[in-house]
Amino acid sequence: MSRFIAVFCCCAVLMTAALPVRSVTWSESPQLAPKVNRGELPPVERRLPESPSVVRFQDDDKSPGRYGGELRLLMGRSKDVRLMVVYGYARLVAYDRSLEIVPDILESVDEEDGRIFTLRLRKGHHWSDGHPFTAEDFRYYWEDIANNTELSPFGLPSVLMVRGETPLFEVIDSHTVRYTWTSPNPFFLPALAGSRPEYIYAPSHYLRQYHPRYSDRAKLNQEAKSKGQRNWVSIHTKRYHPYKNQNPDLPTLQPWMLTTSPPSTRFVFERNPFFHRVDSQGRQLPYIDRVVMNIVDGKLIAAKTGAGESDLQARNLSFSDYTFLKESEKRNNNQVRLWQTTKGAHIALFPNINAEDPVWRALMRDVRFRRALSLAIDRREINRVIYYGLATEGNNTVHEDSPLFRSRYRTLWSQFDLKTANALLDELGLEARNKEGIRLLPDGRPMVIIVETAGEDTEQTDVLELVHDTWLKAGIKLYSKPLQREVFRNRIYAGSTLVSVWGGLENGLPIANMSPEELAPRSQDQLQWPKWGQYVASHGKVGEPVDLPEVNQLAALNERWLRATSKMEREAVWHSMLEIFADQVFTIGLVASVPQPVVVKESLRNVPQKGVYNWDPGAHFGIYRPDTFWFETQ
Image (cartoon, one colour):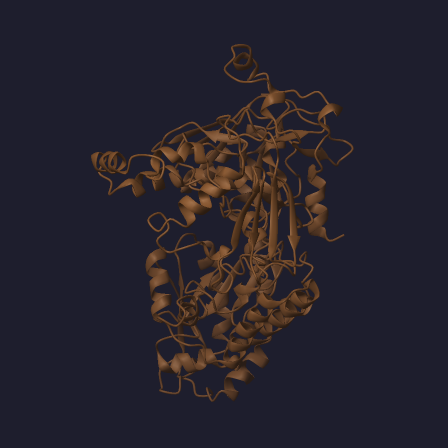
């Protein structure tokens, strides 16, 4: 068993088959009992689906939790209210601890040939307002949102399109829908399970009142104009942003529901009385009654966490805060845990192969130059000085706990070897130096590289100071330049930036059935080849066509993955792409697996001692099911 899978399994829960209805007696939070007694809520057995989703605790020394309590979180921006959708991690299908996709909101999914998906809902499942959740909610999304040219002027979401083909959507019965493509759609289920999920359903009973197909168009438009909005589209769109999580009236399927209207500096989330999960003893989840999210200046979150103002915190904390947070443990009855991070690299350098300057562009396109830059970096020194030796040194590639990991992908061209770096630079014809020992470019300019950062913390600058010292020994002068994020990105897109700093692969924990598109040109946001990515994303309308053979090979392999019908073939494509990506040094990873501080109130239970803090897959805390967290004391 890999370390990653072991870490995930240690925490608490696995989603399993539903409990037989007659095998248990359902129970609920005491918080809801008064509403049931007053007739404001039906009893729990009528609020749960006929076959709820069951979480079972794996560790022998852990038992199901107890009800009650308030969980405090700190966030740096009001729009971070969306993270409750991430942490809640209620999805049609979801990743389990082995990174397999399993049913969650859905009772089951039947997949045929990777192109026919039959989704079966849980009978008796309800939205948070008590209205039935049925196939009608999928039909409404398909007909009245996705295929409505006013609400969706750009057409269907890309995940529903396969080579320009729309799926055949069918309502089989009130609890079954089907999507059919003529070619495989490997993106469909992962998109439904994502940290930012693709919504293919909507609460039709709530939204119909804002849709002219079911309400008076003239009245809706008049209402919109009275509120300074354009027309009915604005009203409908504002009320249906399930991921943004800004409308307290929008019914939800998440474990907690928003009760605070923005703007606010304090958002309160109350338990969803119709939530579809139970523990093995038949107790409806979540255990915790409510979550309070306080919005503060992001720069103050570490200090406020250290002062005991949060019960569970990782957002806006970095490894540089660890010592301070550790010192505050006893004062505030907190525990500071270090979880793994799994991006391809915590910090990576991105040579801009699309640089505007023709001399620099020629160098950036030559693999010998990129290899020399990588070999002239002492990653061990960076790890010791900045990260106390706790990080992993090497390239920007998949994490060692991914089944696709090979040590060669991490180490290729990443050893500190000044002799080879200088030999490669000499081989490029860059032997000439000025009186300060700086190499000269072919046009006589000194080889000065300005590495641009988004300027959001000092960590990158500290790392670049160490890179500066070893690059200097190879005859290259480095200056760092912090910029505002928007300026930072726009300069890269325009080709003005030579080298930039950012994190590595977003998905460092892939399996063969996850897309390898991060390794191929696909988006302007890929900092090593923004103009090529823009060209691909725009279907040739803007940007520049790819004209480097190895990058075209990556693009062809990505297309091959899309056409593949077996896991074995997809795995082979992944390895080919990872090999090329490492050998060609398109990005220069420095360190990975930098520990993430996670501060946990001592009384908060079922939060893993050792965990993985990852965006997708993982949803940060979501894969650990915060609906199963509970307070021993308050």
